[in-house]
Image (tube, rainbow, N blue to C red; front, side):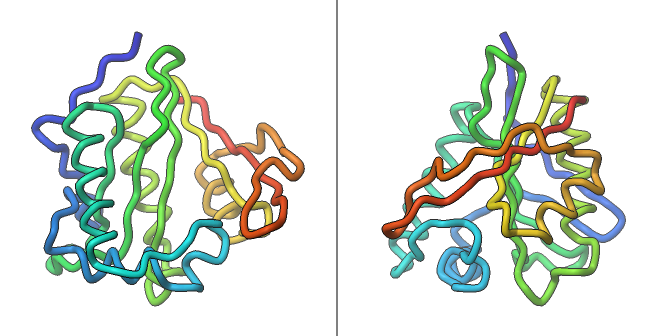
Length: 181
């Protein structure tokens, strides 16, 4: 069975980015990312309404890290500690050495290769350090930008589930993309 340990927290750096642990100081940016209609367009979850909800989310992220069940990084630009996005491995299936990749990026930073850079760093950590065998991403099929960034990193569509997700009174399709390490 896969054994992971996120202590000490692994700070990852790339040419332009620092991926660090999220903290309470990030609450305003996290609030934006979890409430902005444009960001939530393909995530199919209710927007947060209060900072208390964000603090509960940050505590949940911390619990996942502390219990070695999930890991979530704040994406920041080098030289600027302000959170511009998040990226994580969650739904880690330790029996099958597989983790689900999730990510969000502030709209003003999209289209600049930032998420691709963050994904490469997180995948390297996932395959080399965590010893994952595979990574997956569950994507709303209408989210063509997310699909493009995954495919450019070598992900392939592994499954397409028709109307497998119920949200706001309608059934939504899901596409599963994967990458073998």
